[in-house]
Image (cartoon, rainbow, N blue to C red; front, side):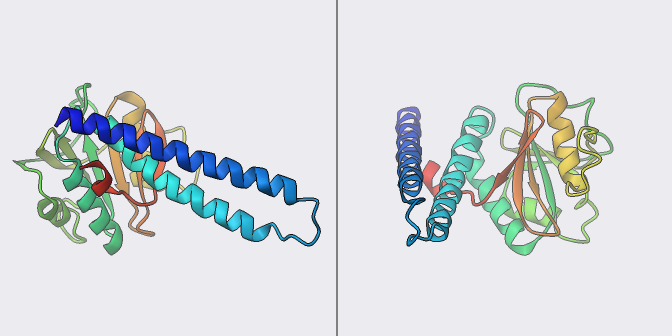
Length: 210
C-alpha cells in the first residue's frame, strides 16, 4: 500500500508539472500575441484561468492527502462528507488532530466516541441539529466530540468577508498543527485551514488518491 501511495504521489506531481508547463506555454503565447491587434486575449485568459482552477483542484487533493495521510486513514470518507455538505450548503467545521494536543483550545464539546462515517458526520451538521454550529474533532478514524468552540483568529477579525467558522478554523491552526476543513453555509464553498492560512478547495478529487 505504501509503495502504491508513493507511486500515486509521484504521478500527481508529474500531472502538476505538466499542467504548470502547459499554463506557462499559454502565457508565453499570449505575450507573443499581445502586439497583434487582430488577436483578442480575452479567450486566452479564460482558458488560462480554467487551467489554473483545474490545477488548483488537483493540488488541493494532493496537499490535503499529504497533510492528513499520517494522521487519519479516513481521507476518502472526509472527502465524501465535504462534497455532500457543500452540495447541500450545510455549514461545517471539522478539526483533524495531528501531533499537537488540542485539549486546551477546544471548549464545550460533547463526547461522541464513534467511528468516522460520512453519514454520521453529515447528520451532526444537519441544520437544526443541536451540534451543527460547533466543530467536530477527529482523531485518526474516530469522531471524538462535536459542538466544540474554537479560538477565533484576531488577525482576520476585521475582514467582513471571513465568517465565524473560517475565523475559528484559522484561529485554531494559528496555535496548533491541526488541519481544519470548513464548509460555508452561505455559499457552499469549501476550504481548509493549516498553519494559520485558509486555502480554497474548488473540488476534492478523492479518486485520484485512493
